[in-house]
Image (cartoon, rainbow, N blue to C red):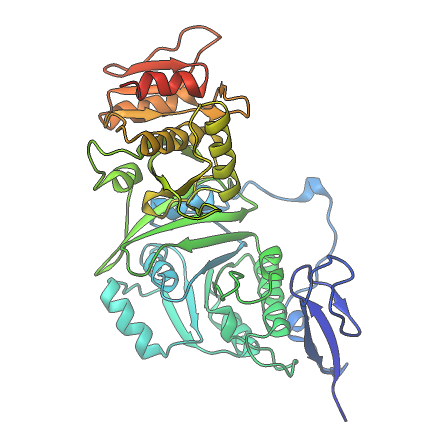
Length: 455
């Protein structure tokens, strides 16, 4: 007898009795995936509910929040991204490309967390011996760290019940499977069912669960996008495997801000924190070269200096080539249009390439002025002073708009030895500049170009 099947949308998470080319709820095309549904014995409790205690409703006044919920992970950069540390009873998803350092990060924090808490590290991709060899290389030898090489979610729940850990690490979610489903590990149904089981375990028992999920070719974690909606916190580990630096950012966080980033360097003995990312991003910056400008952006509560480079050359094609890396493509094209219309530079017929150094992605409007000055500098072949930083949002009429936390940005600029900064013209009082920093005020992009690129 053929097993009953349903169809699951990987974009919105809804189920349908039959297949169609387009999801009837979210409208996505070719997003329905078949999954087998096995009829369960009513006398046998399911994996998701048989091991967990029954919950009863309580009034809001009865909820106790006096106990400290957060704990220190031992890595300040990770604590910053999490919003101040790990949260008891939370489900955290750490995603990234294979080999980027996700397992190294979670195994490395076990040394510090193991001083106070009992940890169960479940690996479905390695044996206990392989994990021990990696732990020795990282210097992890906590007596409170338990390891288990298992992929069956039922056996994992039994191990959790027997060992009673306070921290559970799953490496990785693609390797787990539920025996109640006939589909293969890593399929939509298996990932959804196992993640739901882990979420119920975290909420009912107060265990903090860290789950590793690999990013597939489409850029989604572990295949289905629904995995991101089920967890409390989604962390993305970014960076090139050929480079030594990694950036950790939060795409979702129910317990803190999603604007913070953490910077790490991949060394021989694991990940090393980079407390000053501005120095990292500005290392190797060329001197007295056209087409480069430094911007000061805010990543949460941290000001970061980033170098924006632009290359504009006459095009030999009817349609010029345009490329943007680290800066939104549509935003870069908008700034080019403003530069031609309001700045008086005929850049519409030039091949344009914009790049943010260091693998950083900028989505803050405060970098508009720096990007436009880099484009104008490359087009006119006039270098921008090496000791200058540009801050300001540019409107469609070419005016420079105010940005938030300007004083904090200027303090960071002065701390790194820059001598001057060009900012939007102040209309409400005079801004006190840090010692040794000269401020240039401009009302429009044309004024800024005349101040900086006048020759």
